[in-house]
Amino acid sequence: MPRNYKSTEVHLSPDPRFDSMLATKIINKIMWDGKKSTAERIFYEAVDSCAQKLGVDGSEIFVQAIDNIRPRIEVRSKRVGGATYQVPMEVKPRRQQSLAIRWLLDAVRGKRGKPMALRLANEMLDAYNNQGAAVTKKENVHKMADANKAYSHFAW
Image (cartoon, rainbow, N blue to C red; front, side):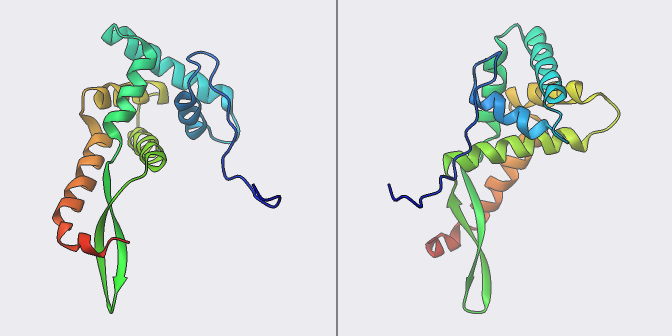
């Protein structure tokens, strides 16, 4: 490896409760203004609530929920000549995970009137059951890619 190589990999440690990097990433995306303990409390309350309702291990719930939200294909803009085409392309696993987490939290933050932990628990339950706003977002992205598959030959 060259000496001037800079790693783009952020070094995170797994969360203490589930020993999961995915849980750490979700907690870090929940966090605002550096308040990690608040973000952890919100996440763990949501997972505990889901586990209690479903009678399933907590780590299985958020892993399955994120897996159900992951987009397999997305559209990207490609300029050819004077026209811009929406070209369907496969999504790399790391981007799949980050999009899934982002969509989950966008859906949670889009709702109002209940505590964050309760909103997160409800959205995770919905995602676990292949329902909810985040799963709908994934399905819309897949439909858009399917509708534009005629332009797939422009993929780079």
